[in-house]
Image (cartoon, rainbow, N blue to C red; front, side):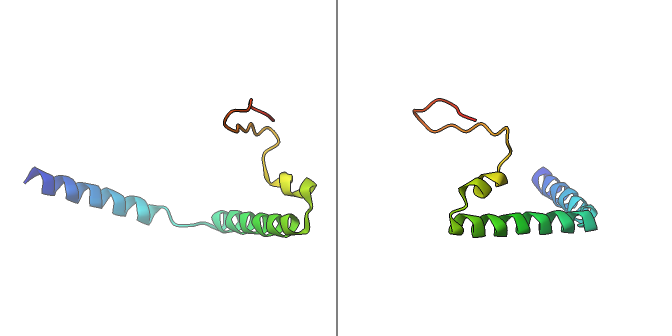
Length: 72
């Protein structure tokens, strides 16, 4: 019996959160900007523009390949 109440509570909470998080114009603009950046990245990658390909990543990005030291 307690499991049923818990499931109903979780479902109600999920429903309340999903209804309250309606997309805004800013969300749409952000999504469009991300899509444009990825499309440009694909075009630059296919054209061999290595300098522009790396513009997609944060300048302070630290990456790590297994067996090699961290690099910026």
